[in-house]
Image 1 (spheres, rainbow, N blue to C red):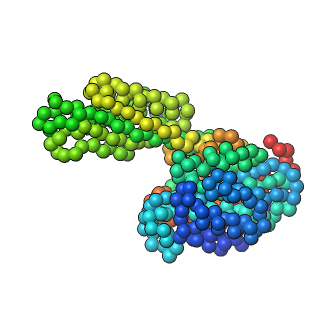
Image 2: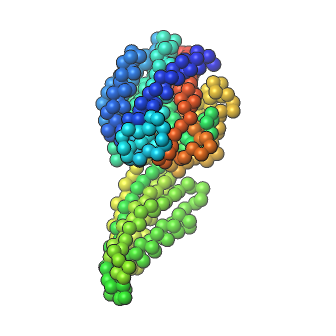
Length: 395
Ligand code: NI
């Protein structure tokens, strides 16, 4: 263990709190992270770290060159906020009405700036290169920040990548780790079921879109309950059902929206195919005319075993054995870090921020215990340090 890393993390704690609070007060939506980018660039400049900007959207890619040759280790933080009206009442609450860092990406940026500060201080001792990835647009699958950065080619020489997310289901002070399946693939669908409106007293003269849609919803439930293996980790939720104009009119149109979460790419294809087929069957049965628009979102986040083992031993050494929480189950939530892990070995890590009464992610009252900025930066800086502190052969 390098005690200097822990000491440096303590020294940069006030900076990290300041950055986190500033970013929290000035949140920006996906694809609009202009001022957040400005803050990141200012810090990197002050630290004397080389950077590239706008490789994709408002991304910033910083590079710390070690004093010796060796592998290239990347660390990523996402930058964007959500369209949520903040209710925390914090003195540094959002100054942008209706926009909030409710997913903790403010902390992710502050921690990565802390990691940059720590590793830049010890750069002469490093055998290799550190790539700092400040990524826009994690929350918006259609802009897809991680995919855009991968396609820019700027990470082509990276050997291993790490990233973290604050995680309220895990207590403050614990680090959630798991090899293999970690976070699910996330797809989204819109369905229109077109029937024929009619007088409520004469249903036989129309085609009731509400009754048809209700049948389709139970078919979707049956696909999950009766066609998929419970061990296969498949979830389908219909979150929107809009239909009807008036109590005594048979509805002519039903509109539904939902999401499918999977791990196995074959199950992903299966769900898309079965939702489509079941709508065709519905049309045959009811005489409706249905359409589905199925959009693929983030892929599954699958952690590399050797990177998880490395992270676990670093957490035990630097934060204590008790801090390691090996997760029994993966999450069905999604994360675009998956786009990096499809090409580069590495792991995504959950940084516990659960404390009594703390609301979940994406809640208007969500906040963090700021002590995790220090432990998060210690962990990530140590993960990189322990990879680059001696001569290793490039993978
Ligand atoms: Ni998030």
